[in-house]
Image (cartoon, rainbow, N blue to C red; front, side):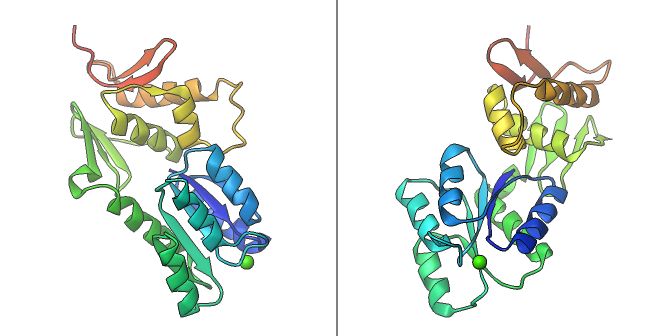
Length: 225
Ligand code: CA
């Protein structure tokens, strides 16, 4: 998923971004609250990790603004203070969870997984499109019972396509969900990755599931004649 990290300490920020990228997420970073709010308004993030003690607009104020705009993405607040009042104010402002610094990146990733699950009923932890099965929690995929080995980026693409299936997904949405904001949309990278994914899931002998819809985007479904 696409995640925003807002943290003013460059060392902590780098550490968080690296852990999230290694876990397969597309990550953008902000150094202060105004930048965080601007980025959150620019793209469709699936989660935000906000430091409470940010310069200018703090993490709680960013949370409040997001909720006032009707944006429901999961928000995790992080604070060095561990102050009970901060925690209550943050949750009242609309944050979904709270981390007290110093926290381990394992804990951050576990909390994010829990927030993702909260937004998705248990039955939807496994997505199925015909004989293709995608296990969101285990981050594995198989077709006809045979496991498919996917890179983080390929898995992220497949997850977005499977969630929308049988509806198509536009190129813009795929790029927003799978790449960070430094992605150069003028390149052919998306098509290249879709082709990697297609070669892995649509093996010779099985009916193709990943289709290119000219001028629309891509769809994961069985095209019935
Ligand atoms: Ca701070």
